[in-house]
Structures are given as structure tokens and as C-alpha cells.
Image (cartoon, rainbow, N blue to C red; front, top):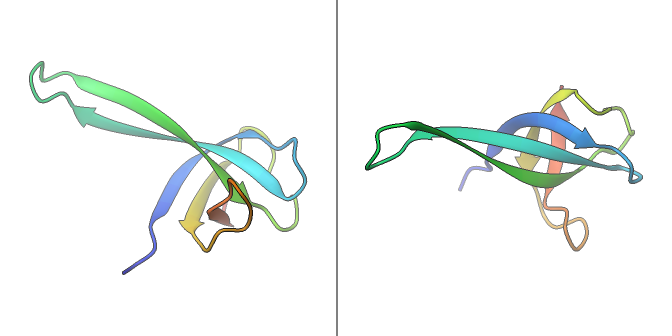
Length: 76
């Protein structure tokens, strides 16, 4: 099964080797036919602490790195 790749914005880089990435998805509401925006936050592994708040990054699924980290930063 292929690994998922998501694109989002870094919202926090306070922890060592970890960034919090907010990923937004848009979809049409099934009944109201209105475009709805939903966002979800993922914690991703950033080996070199290269990314700062506001950067747009791509993240990829990986084996668990810690209790909350299941993603790693692919590229900017």
C-alpha cells in the first residue's frame, strides 16, 4: 500500500526534531452544497530542525517515531 503524502503549513517548531503541520482539506457539503474547510494537525519528524513556523512542507507517512509522531517531513 502506498504511503500518503500531505501538504500543509508548519504551525509550531518548539520541540526538538519535531514540527506541527496543519493540513487543510476542502470538500463540498453533501446536503448544503457549500464548500467546507477542515483542518487537522500532524506531528512530523524534522531531522535537522530546518523548518520554521509559516513554511509550507510536504509530509509522508512512516513507522512510529514516538508516541505522537507517525509522519516525517519530505521536503519544503
